[in-house]
Image (tube, rainbow, N blue to C red; front, side, top):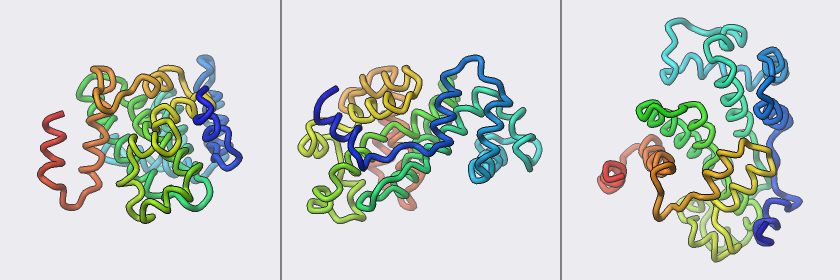
Length: 240
């Protein structure tokens, strides 16, 4: 591992996913994991259970009936989707020390994840895996922001940090960009190998066919959060 990246990933202040996420990561990598095992882990976290129920009742699922309990949500989602979504919502509780806008970061990441899921459906790709990967696609920015928060605050106002932080600035600060750092973070957290490789090989300047979905998802995610999207942003998405 690049020493600069190791400093970020293994830093004492680097946040780790919550305990529930760690348990779910372990189960995701066990092909013989039973739905009862997943349910037991999720049931220990009422907040996570509520998020799954809300998701089942959202327009993105478009269920024919209202879901009111985890027991009703499980058969609707299915085993694989349940694992991936539970992991996604749990990972969103990952936060570190003050100095980085974690709440706004996860809000933007969620918008990218929703866009990735919708686009993947249209492209007949795995929508739930795309949702999870979209959610953590920029996780390296959080790692860099956590490790170099004092330096970033000297450069940028707190409110504009996420808008100004880009791969050029990241490389100036720590010798690596968010995707290189993100791949190492996902490896440390035992994410599935295909997701790690997706970040390892991602080139934001020249996205290839396999990564274009996430390039476009980030642009669409910005539009989802914009109350008055600029014409150039819309043009950028259409052009993609």
